[in-house]
Image (cartoon, rainbow, N blue to C red; front, side, top):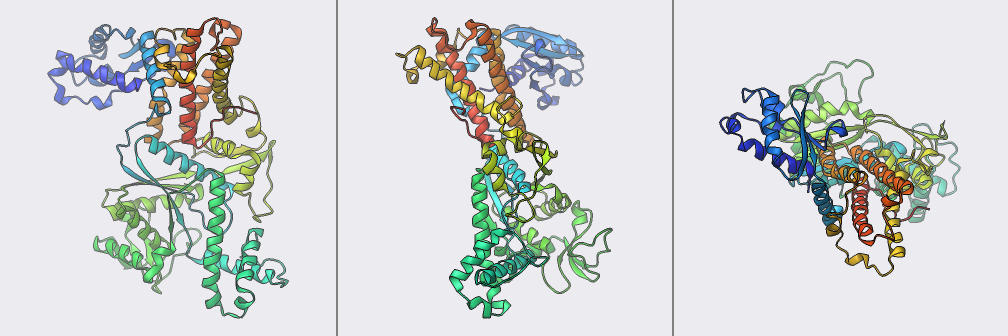
Amino acid sequence: MNLFTDFESRIKNILESLDIVREKRSDLDFGRINIEPPRDASHGDVATNAAMVLAKALSTNPRALADLIIEKLRQDPEVADVSVAGPGFINVRLSVSYWQKLLAAMIRTSTEYGRSTVGAGRKVNVEYVSANPTGPMHVGHCRGAVVGDALANLLAFAGYDVTKEYYINDAGSQIDVLARSAFLRYRQALGEDVGEIPPGLYPGDYLVPVGEALADEFGTSLRIMPDDRWMPLVKERVIDAMMAMIREDLAALNVNHDVFFSERALHDNGAARIRTAINDLTFKGHVYKGMLPPPKGQLPEDWEDREQTLFRSTEVGDDLDRPLIKSDGSYTYFAADVAYFKDKFDRGFHEMIYVLGADHGGYVKRLEALARAISDGEAKLTVLLCQLVKLYRGGEPVKMSKRSGDFVTLREVVDEVGRDSVRFMMLYRKSSEPLDFDFAKVTEQSKDNPVFYVQYAHARCCSVFRQAREAFPDLDLSSIDFAGAVMGAIVDPAEMQLVAKLAEYPRVVEAAALSQEPHRIAFYLYDLAAAFHGLWNKGKENTELRFVNDRNRELSIARLGLVHAVASVLRSGLSITGTSAPEEMR
């Protein structure tokens, strides 16, 4: 049961019953009507702009229309009070019986409360992480991994058909460099003194086991092979080793993908899929042969001072046309992007989300242009850019990792503070804003540590049930109808405030999904935890407000229903963020 959609339906039914509306119904846009919490909670429980947005079309003034709506609302037995504010906002205060009915519905649906159908089963592909398989995941990948994974969880909870995808960049010059780096470690494993790692190769110690595995498998045979023979053998094995390490890193962060798509697959069979995608663009008139003027600043890798095959991307929203085929006949990196997007579209995805690092901002317009050209405007493509993460320990910048050579690995961060702290804190700021991650602060057991504060609220909920078993040892909690118990019993204004906070959850889920902002769930969970802790503390000051009162069995059971609802929403929201809901905190 969604409070806001319920009252949206009630308001629209009232409008449909008004003579002034029936006369002009075909000219009215009910889609602009909002039902939301008032900005000032003292004004009521829900507010609507219905009179404001419809008055002009009805040739009346907002307050006059508001008075007609209010007259009908006062006839609703579940409306305790209603008033008009400002130029025509309608504020509604709900009856205690309505809040009790809503709480009962929350209890019955448990962790399914808040699940939405706003996605209507639409297929959406969320691609995130997609790091080059050239080394372990670093903390920069961490934020995109968490944001993408939580967004996918959120969209699934909101009714979308979601596929989590990872694009393996296992083709191109960086893979050649990786293979040469691994081959150097192979020579080292054979006992050769390789000295300092030459500039341009990957220096991290993570390639040492790869070199040792190559030595175990091939002995000294690779050393006597020419480059064109050992290179494909080493490439295959080092990519497999890097992807196994990346999968382990992601699993440590509770990040799992449904699809791992290999870029190499696009280059198989003479790059047939790339050629087909370019032919498709050519048929639609989006490809031509020409020369590009030199761009300002540093020249991109794919710029040539000669004729190339170009994508006419400026006609579909890009800043400049993009090379597809170089003058020597080889495909550009962007040509693989074309084939990859076409593959997604052909798989039935008409909505694609790319979660990229802030350094990929230059890719946004070209990807959006590509989506328009490939799909003839049918596909919706969204690029979410995650800003940088800066690591601190007690306010001091964290030094680089020895294992990686030049960065802090994701696994090091997870191993030190735990995946729950990493995941929640990566979401506790909008992804488009920079994030400072302090190892000391995220392990504090205080209100200032959001993940502790939220998990502690869930643990406290569980402790209430343990207290109830101690207070009423003969009580079988598994057989109690908590939904029925709250009716007529949950009446205190402080309890009503907590129920009102719970009632916001479905609206938060839908808003977060539609705006593709999973951080909203983390923010809401913190606010819900604060409301629950606040009521807990009031019970310390006033014993009559305690959740378990051994002198009042029936009221205790009813309040256990309220606690059950809080715990269910906390578990639901934490599940979306990919964070655990502990029953005890140590």
